[in-house]
Image (cartoon, rainbow, N blue to C red; front, side, top):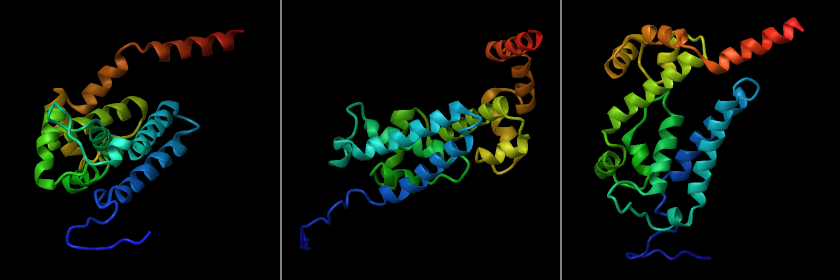
Length: 202
C-alpha cells in the first residue's frame, strides 16, 4: 500500500517513536539473564521470563496499539505503568534516562514526571533509589557477592554511594542488614539442611 505524504497526514505507526527499538535491549537482557540462571536460580528465570512476556503482551495489546490513553485516576494507563516498571527493572544496573521512559510510554519528556508521580507516589529519582536498594537486598540474600559488586550491579556509582543510599532508606548499613538477615531463621534453608542430614544418615 502506498503512503501519500501531506501537511495533514501522519506517517504510519508514528505514535510509537522508538518503542520497539528501546524494548529490544530490555527483552534481550531479560532473556540473557534467564538463560544464565536456568541451571541454578529458578525464581530469577521465572521473573525474567514474566517481565519479557509482559513487554510482549503490551506490544500486542489493542489498547496499547491504538492512541495512548491515560488512566482515569490521572496517572499512567495500565500498559504504560507495566512498560515503565519492566524497563526500570531490566536496567537497574545502568543509567536510566527520562527521555527513554517517556518514549516507551508515549509521553513528552516535560510531562512524564506528572503521571509518574501520580502512579508511583514519588519522583523518578526516589523510586529508582528504592528499587536499586531492593535489588541490592535480593543480591545480598541470594549471593556471596561483595558490596562493591552489588553496588555496581544495582546502578550505584561505587560502594560508598550505595552505603549512603542504603542507610538513608533502610536505616542501617548494608553489612549490618546482611548480618541481621543471615541470623534470622530461614524455614526453606532449614528444611533443605534437615533433608540433607536425613539422607546422609540413611
